[in-house]
Image 1 (cartoon, rainbow, N blue to C red):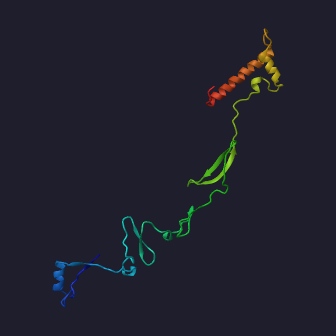
Image 2: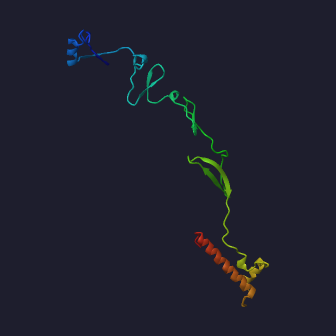
Length: 197
């Protein structure tokens, strides 16, 4: 359905420049009538070039000769993209720009990944860095053997075992004292690193 104004057929003004009687009456009481247009109005004539009107949730998308009701914009109507995400016009397939020349897995049991991230949140460089444990103590001093010959395992075992019923010798007692000092140092280091002992 379309609304068409039923206008007077006479001239709008007379030869003296006054609005004619027919137009005066019409302007005081304009008349309209409803008519049905059976054909499809072309785009060049101000129509849609399509006899189907858009429904709820639809839009009319032009294809060059008519406006087609659709619920989405067809791929052919999409523009091209450039920058970090690119695609040619009329395509739904996008391509991400390459910012990292060394893709792959980073980090393992002995290394950790090192990443460089730009202001956009893109990883621009990545590598693996070896894990280096921090030294928590020097044990040579605890045994009092700096610059001296270290005690052998048999000497340490003998010092701990000792001779039944006899006092430890000065060497044995020194080894035991150094072992106790070492254990205390280990305990302190563990506790300071958050490990309960």
